[in-house]
Amino acid sequence: MNDTICALATAQGGALSVIRISGNDAVSIVSKIFVPKGGAPLKERKSHTVVFGDVCTDCVEVLDEALVTIMKGPHSYTGEDTVEISCHASPYITQQIMITLLELGARQARPGEFTMRAFLNGKMDLSRAEAVADLIASTSRASHRLAMNQLKGGFSNELGMLRDKLLRLTSLMELELDFSEEDVAFADRGELMQLCGSIESVISRLADSFSVGNAVKNGVPVAIVGETNTGKSTLLNALLHEERAIVSDICGTTRDTVEGVMTLSGVTFRFIDTAGLRETHDVIERIGIERTLEQLKKSSIALWLIDPTAERQQIEEIASRLLPVCRGKKLAVLVNKCDAVDPITLSKMMEWGMAMVEKHGQGAEWNKRDLWAISARQGTNMDRLEEFLVRSASLPAISAGDVVVTNVRHYEALKRALENIKEVKQSLADGISGDLVSEPLRAAIRNLSEIIGEVTNDEVLGNIFANFCIGK
Image (cartoon, rainbow, N blue to C red; front, side):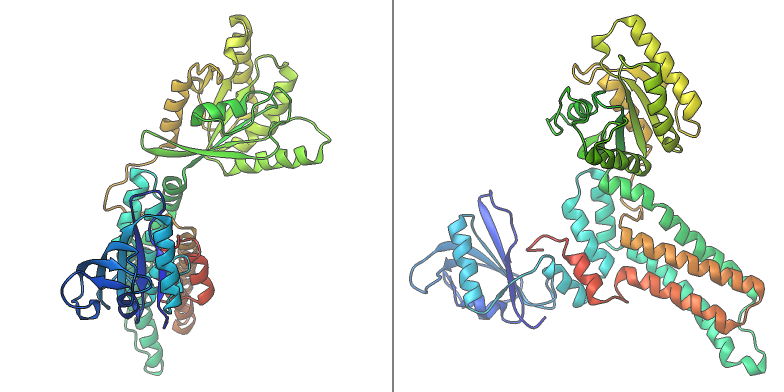
């Protein structure tokens, strides 16, 4: 935290590049390579000003004309003196500037180090710092809105109100301990129980929102499953409009999961092409089949492909393995390769597919309209499949003020806090003494504090900011 860091903050390929420098010596280091075209030297310039001049790496030859922005701490992103050099995006120019900055005493910034310094300098809490990465990675309007709301402090405000209630509850319990010999009660146990119920309700709402938030952020998981050579990889490629998976007439081509992401009607879907199910002695293929079932368990939507040339016994065997795993999932049954068979065979396959779901698919969210014929190769009825996916995602509309949990770390902390509150409620109901009730209350406060970074450690910070891009 005492040294000065620098990094290229823009991606290559544009017309301009921005090099960011932050730390106590940021202004003095840049002053050694930058000559303003008129006016006072850089060190004498006011904060939040932009200066036009020449970048000279050897104090003689002009490397480039550039704009330099000065932001003096604590009124900067990191809370430290920060300088940004906006130059032309020549790889040679940016490389020479970076080399010179390093020679003058700056250090190459690690991924996310600028944002980590902003957190450590009190410019933002940890949940807002994590929202910066989510904002950069947002791929849809909904994920952008969630990231912006968290960045603006919507989630932090909710947590702040929860902590205030918990602190009030804890203070009342611990105040009773101070006067335990006088047998003084500072709060009615019924009132404390009511307050706990209110806190539990809010934490439960936030924790329950994770399923929606995770789907918005990472995409609704959709598993494409079925027997070998039913056209699963062809369907994945058709949905993504690109050749993502290898397509072959050889059975067992896909031995591991292949994923792809696309957005339909503002909803992001994460499609998983899986290994086809069949009896096999190939060790690698058997591992792929095990992963198929694991991915199916994790998915929200399942697309079961049936080959119209298969025998009923084959379909029965596959259905008995796949459909029980689809309990609680949205299910579509697709008879593929409809362009390659006659209408009578196709009708028979549709009947078999319906019979299999009725026999083995109890608990799956399915009705008769979710069974139809397609041709992944020809694109037949793909519009109907896309309509099914959007309908099955059933994600609520995300407005600018919604507080939705999208981060696994936050979700885990909320779950722990929820267990703490349930323990407090049970203790109050059982008439347990105040000193024993106070311990889970303090644990709940610690768990909520971990989310915003009031309680943390270097390992947690390292894991969080390691996922950032360099320059941010």
